[in-house]
Image (tube, rainbow, N blue to C red; front, side, top):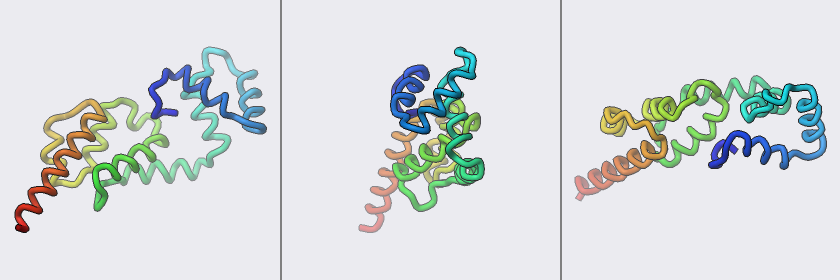
Length: 146
């Protein structure tokens, strides 16, 4: 749901519509015992993870995220893994700028030195720039081999 262009209120409403059986009953019970102003998307995610996703699993994904680097992945593959793991990192990358900094830090050195000085604050724009630089480097390398 975090990847959708919806308000937090719409995300909460949408995910509740997807709940079935035990999960729906669980949320109904939580909802009944919680002040309406506290029933937010963030509250749902935290509470749902606490109930249905083990703490050790979440901790392992956070550590995986903290150690994530591009290594031998393409920028596109690195982006997919970054986004997959970032949902377990509440507070670590709370803003777009923080996501950009973390993403830049994990890029290969030859890409990072060209991109980081720009201090891009829009994540999608940063990823696009990284893909362009990656392609330029690939073309440059192929031209040298000729």
